[in-house]
Length: 279
Image 1 (cartoon, helix red, strand yellow):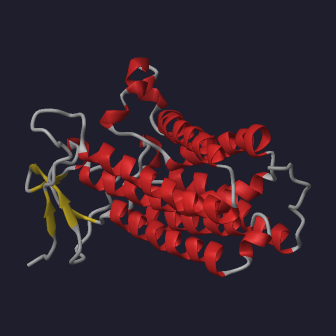
Image 2 (cartoon, rainbow, N blue to C red):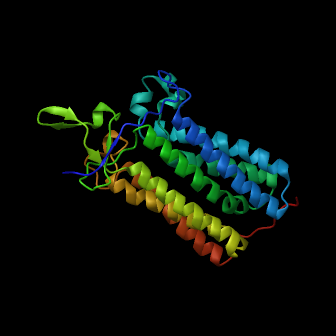
Image 3 (cartoon, rainbow, N blue to C red):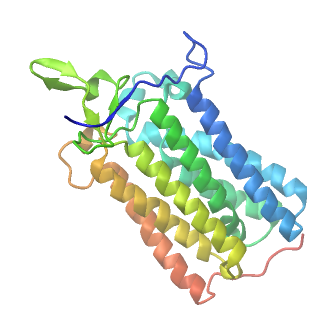
């Protein structure tokens, strides 16, 4: 007898309504927790409160727009180009963390230039822990949405996603059936949660934040390194992933991991320092 969990949780908060939903609630919860984490950091350093308000706007817009466009262009452009209006239907699911990461980097560059007027690595080192906890809640949202599922498994903690897409169902005895799968979303959520606690400790209990870029470098290695590993048991999100040894998500993760290694090296040599503007 195969042990496992028949996952039949619905994302609907109101029967018959797709929005608002549990996915959105978890998404917003992650952002709120992240906001209060960095608010505590800013208060500890005597940073103007106005900076925090502007940071929230920059990051929220970048996260939503970047993650959505990342999914559209990295994974399913062949579908969205036929119905461009579907790009704005975020409530139907479809966000890519790599796209969100790129957009957030661009947003924080602009934030550092026009708001804080500080070295960009100053804000990067402080925002990574909040981003990690937000990522954890977003992946929990994917779990309740029955999306970003794993490959079939006989492990006792496998999930049978009862509301998964028919495209992911397996033919058993001549019939399409749900099978137990790796809960890839849960794997990622756990990895991001652990990363949050480690990065949070780096900021509060070590001197790493004095070496600009150090905490950010570890964030890139933790998050995208873990993402690379989890992809081995995850159903490919792009049609071209079928049969590939290294899938799209892994190819997109490699540059971030390499960047993290380089940034840590440069930070250790204090080669990322530059003169900062005044508060």
